[in-house]
Image 1: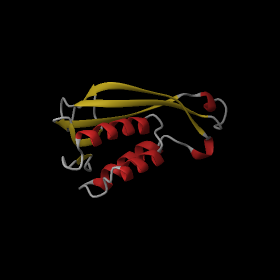
Image 2: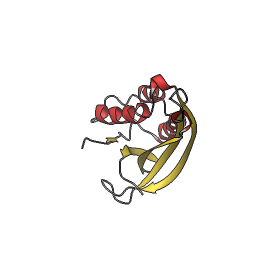
Image 3: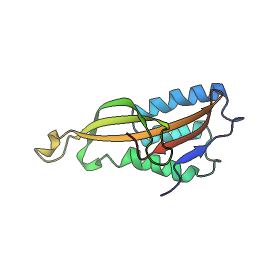
Image 4: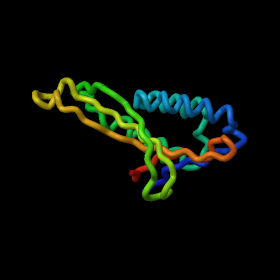
Length: 140
């Protein structure tokens, strides 16, 4: 299993940057579009962090694997719920985003099937500053 977290520099991720990042991150999760996450990672210049590529590749997989380009995937709804990590960071709070979608150009009757995908993310803070951000693969 690859690395799923980024450790952030407190001098780079001030309280103000943390607040802004969290708003922008939530907006990305409302679309689950890879391009939004690319812009987020560029805006906050996260490429210098250790394990950046592994974490970004995992997010890229999450945001693209649910789509079927030839079948025109349509996002129906995105909801958020709270959970707890049950594997790598046992007990750590996790924000889970669940999205439902259909493939409108799939063959009948599959074009009416509603699918669901989920992704969990966790955030660790110290004095209101984000010090760790990651993808959670096992949560309840």
